[in-house]
Amino acid sequence: MKKTIIDLFESSVEKFGDKDFLLEKHDGKFCPTSYKESKALAMKIGAGLVAMGVKPKQTISILAEGCNNWILSELGLLYAGAISVPLSIKLEEANDLLFRLRHADVETIFVSQYQLPKIRKIREQLPLIKTVIIFDGVEALQEGEILLRDVMQKGEEYLKENEAEFLKIGQAIQNDDYATITYTSGTTADPKGVILTHRNYTANVEQALTRISIPPTYRTLIILPLDHCFAHVCGFYIMIACGASVATTQVGRTPMETLKNIPLNIKEVKPHFLLSVPALAKNFRKSIETSIRKQGPKVEKLFNFALKVSYEYNQDGFSKGKDWRFVLKPLVALFDKILFKKVREGFGGELQFFVGGGALLDAELQRFFYAVGMPMYQGYGLSEATPIISTNSIGAGNHRFGSSGKLIEPLDIKILDDEGNEMPCGVKGEIVIKGENVMAGYWKNPSATAETVKDGWLYTGDMGYMAEDGFLYVLGRFKSLLIAADGEKYSPEGMEEAIVDKSPLIDQIIIHNNQSPFTSAIVVPNRDAIRKMVTDADDEAQLKAAATALMGEIDKYRKGGQYADEFPDRWLPGAIAIVDEAFTEQNGLVNSTMKVVRAKVEEYFADRIEDLYTGEGKHPTSAKNLASIKKLAK
Image 1 (spheres, rainbow, N blue to C red):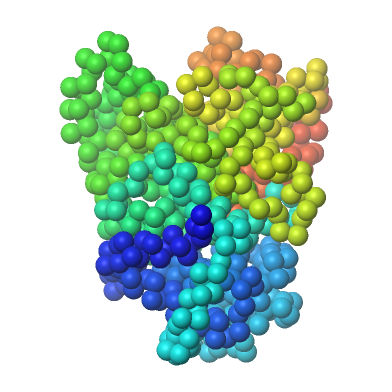
Image 2: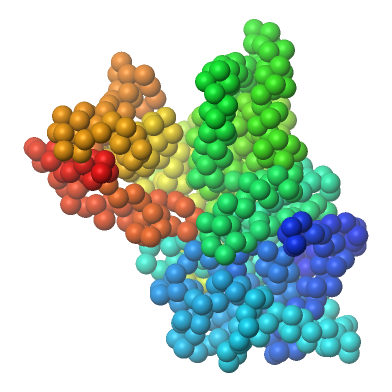
């Protein structure tokens, strides 16, 4: 059966025509655009493109902050039969943008006023680009530039005579026609363009809705970048399928200003669910804890006790209130009424849940948000799977902290070892899946496609196992396993997340072992914590005490320590390189989806890693470690 994005959108416009689809802030308040109005606007954009010579299967980029025009432009270009190449606003023009625009043969690009300077800077190096369509806010246009409103005007004129012909373009699109080329965040020199078809998207929407239910009354506020397929599927295509409403964050003049608008916009929109990633989840928790602290030690003490009681009652979510714990129910309800309800009011008061994507969210964070009544349901997926593969969700038996939830349906899964043998339940290996959500391949990269998709099966490169009860556990990258000197392979991600989450002294850590005598780690300390410990940067005793304390955070996981038995002792770092430079996007150690790029960190700090395997370097109080702490303390 034919089911393209255009088919999906049109059937929803028919069902929910007068309902609010888009919400955007203008003149101090969020204003709605209905499904019917959105279709009319998208058609004008699409018809404008056709009038300007755009042909089906041409590639068109969008480089802009999340807004109505972003979503309408993508729908419009799809109506024109074109392929969307969404680009992250975090990309720098020098290499990242140039590579993608050239590689995808982009001839037309939609751009916001804030992103326009990047394109103008490299325009001469992009001879293929004929048209730059600017959303708004630009006074003087350069050659080849046109405002979106003028494109829409052209479209309006075109539709007067050619509406039936224009609609035929969208109707002619087939399930296997390409909808988007989404570039991976580029942990290697050349990022890969993931080709997702119309049916990839509509199938993944249908699959996701077997796990998550979205009533037409729901609103979401998209706080993640729209270029990623996680925001595409969960942010607006699922909402379209269900007739729900999509608000976008108010765009500031700078990324920081946009970030500051998020908490304010959440209160204004009162979303029923939000998409999140671990970095955002940690920020949300910090701001909740800061506002509790401001209310004084008594409130803080009561809040911490309430959390403790809720944790005991909830257990792993799946076992909530089981056995003797049912006696805690009235107390949990009381704390919810007097404390947690107020926390939820800071998120608009109507938030039912978060959907967590990206890297694994620590079980401790899941426990916290569940306790305060805003569950953060961890999911798992990747761009090559459009992206959803599994998710935790509402309802008894549908979630378990620390897991990535249950598989969407229909979907086939295998867990394979190094030799390609299928593993039974409970045994880890590479996660391999098959379903209508598996990508068509990588753009202009048949060899990478052949390595990743074999006989319709997608080899994810992630390691995990299926539990007997149907929950999927993702343990980290299958291909980025550490290898001990004796050949034992193990994943560093779980250790890294646990250490950062439970340690007030450590902000970032990368654990390393490449057949080395012992495991080591690169540690970025929390600057504020260091400054509290080291009041005099020239006092060597204080510097040594701080270095010892940082090593002590890892020792807590050893035998006899506070968190003993979480990980085998032999896996834990035996030496640490304390560094004074954080892993950031600016120094290239974090990619555009906020994931630390392990290989780049190891390359960047190669000399420090080498030093750890020397007599002097392996001591926590080595000269290089003390020098880093001294720098941080100043």
